[in-house]
Amino acid sequence: MTTKSEIQALLRFLSQDARIPLPTAISKVKELQSANLTSSDSLAKSSITPIQAIFADERLAKQVLSAAKRVTKKRGREVGEASAESPAKRKKIASTGEAATPAAIEDSLALPESNADEEELAKTVVYTNRAPLVLAFATKLLEFTMPSQPLSSRLSLAQAVVSVNARTKALSLGIEKGISAEDDGWGQGQPKIRVMGRDIRVMKRWGYEWKGKSEEEGENLKLEGSDTVDSQKTLKQGGRSDDEPALWGLDLEALRSSKGPLVSGAQGANGSGLPIYTAQSARAYLLKSFASVPPPTNEASPPLRKSAALLNAEKEHNLGLILRALDVVFRSWALLNREELDKRTWSWYVAVRPEVENGVAGWGGKGEVKLSQILNLRRKG
Image 1: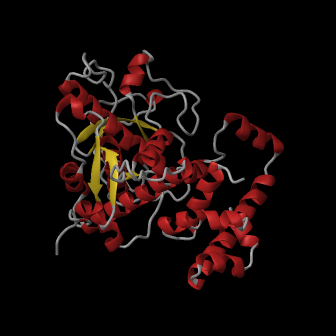
Image 2 (image 1 turned 120 degrees about the vertical axis):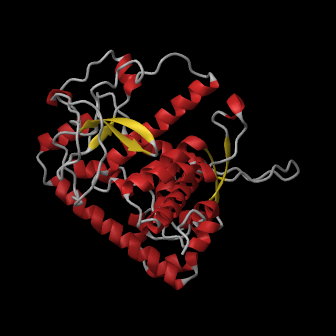
Image 3 (image 1 turned 180 degrees about the vertical axis):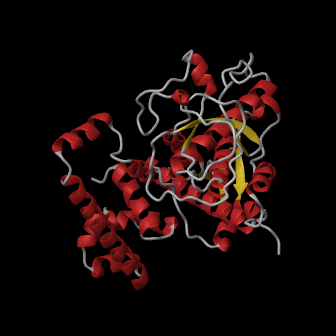
């Protein structure tokens, strides 16, 4: 019997590696199960005949088989490389649960991608609340305004934007009371960057070297604040140098709860033990937040319930479409400098965010986001 995780892995392979539209992939799951073709490994070992019998279209069948062989071959190389490591090193990695290298950490954080054209994007409507949409906007924005930062940093900084915005909103609604950690002085001495018009306190990730790091000449990271000592692992006041390291978004509320201060010392490459917004939690939030629009309620003929694996696969697919639509928008505005692009992004988000009730009643409320409206944000002409 195929488990939920196996079905989810199969759908992820079909939609992301084999580039099969998710609705088509979902419709073929039962036939693939009957043929015992429920993984990239089993598909790679199969001939084209049983695959073509399921997908009918010869082109799609060849596409699936080719992707399965490619993925299996790549996995074999990775296993071979891992087996060459010393037993002590493998034991250390397994016991800590950390990826072996910064490059592996970045690979593990990869977000769903989509090759959907604009016609398909324009037909898509997703169901979500506002916070994850802010997170998606901020993550994609940082890809353009801070391209030399690794994905782990962009996710951390984007989550910081969500947190700052949520606290500001909660205070205005009376949901939270009291002085913020920022106003209480816990951010003093820590430099700031501006993302979507929000000031975010950051920390420097000393010694973090990741695969594919690029240096962009003339990149202008706006840093503010007082000088800080190196032992605090923070940025110094002033402009960005050509070799500016990766950053973490600093969680001041967590810092205050731990009663600080920030100190130097051993830290995992994933930031464990530090008062930061972790990339892993930001990624997990994105993956689970973009559902398909619920079908109309019909008591006479209730819709069939989808399995958890299918629902998760749909959400991942929808996230890929959201990020694809945002990418189209940001690329169309490539003529803007980074400061101007950052200024405009918040108003773009406001223009397409889901409609919810006003006041406390709308806190955490969900609604529809039409990707056609996101595409309308593109630069005209």
